[in-house]
Amino acid sequence: SSSGVGTHFIGLPRPGALQKRKECEKLSSDHKMEQSQLVEVNRRTDTVSYALLAEINHFHSERNLDFKVAMQNYLDGQILFYEKIVTKLREALESYT
Image 1 (cartoon, one colour):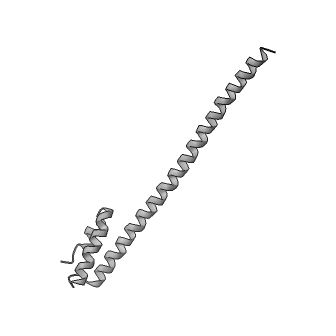
Image 2 (tube, helix red, strand yellow):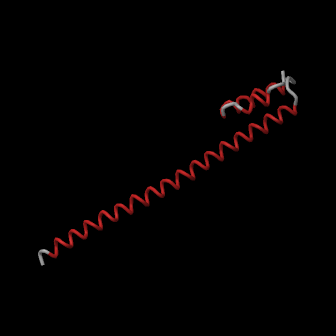
Image 3 (cartoon, rainbow, N blue to C red):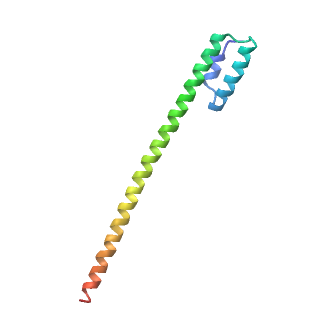
């Protein structure tokens, strides 16, 4: 039956959405699903796919920003650490001059 295609489709996990799309394409080719329903399934699958791509892009952007900030903090800390060592070495040198 064609009822419930939309309601069940929207809650599917992402990999399941593509499988559901293939199932619906088969049903449509067997004339067991209206073409308009297949168009709706394809639209929803595309929406899920685009949302997933947007999430992936956002994740990568956030990860890159987090890495950049972490490296800046690490390098700032290293600079301070080695500047203190240089100061101590200069103080030690002065005690010999």
